[in-house]
Image: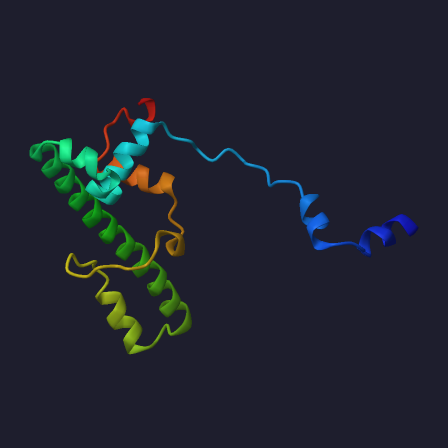
Length: 149
């Protein structure tokens, strides 16, 4: 009991306390090869994934292909984020205001729009990198052999 009380009452400097903290465990987040990361980044951030020297050396056809794929990916992600947002908000309104006219109007207007840009972050929607990759694979924006690259 005395030992337990000594552990609870820390006497010392903060720097010695923090130096004794063990690092957190890594539970094996998926790692991707450089090629997989390049393909993913091309879709997610487009030509900004490359530095200026590489872009200067790249021919215009490849740049345009990257820009086109990036635009398709961004449009698909925007629609997907809207769908997730609509599902979440409809659930909230249905549980809080089931009989309200506003709720009925929201439920009727539950189609995503290409003209609306969803600015919510992936983290706020609970979307992880693996989810985005699965979505890109479903939409055939990434090659079917992506996992083996």
